[in-house]
Amino acid sequence: MSADSPPPRMGPICSFPNSVRLVVNMKAELQEVMNMLRKLQGAIDFSNAPMAEREELAGDVADIMDALFEAMKKLPDE
Image (cartoon, rainbow, N blue to C red; front, side, top):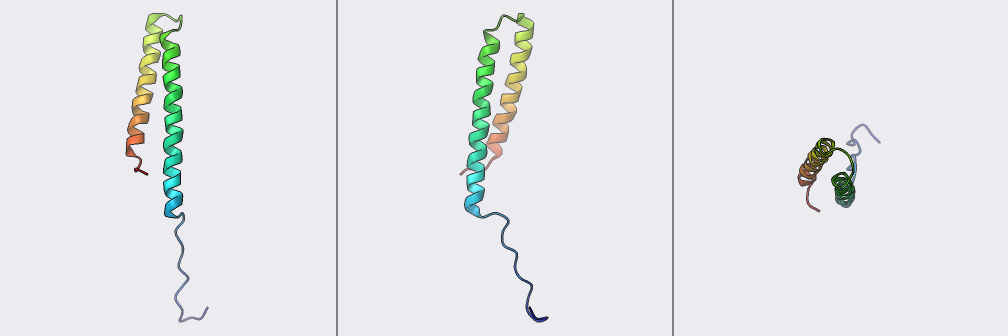
């Protein structure tokens, strides 16, 4: 490389198709977590724990699901 030649260009860190694949994979993983939370919600609903404890746990799970849903909405569409 001579002193007159421009420095080599840096390529993108990740290509567009890889970015799309990453978003699709992330959405799939978040959906899987959401499904696990739904199963947990069902287990809480039908457990033998005291009602107050079930309601508290159910509220915690609902809050997590709401936050997860909001995070999923912020991801770009495929």
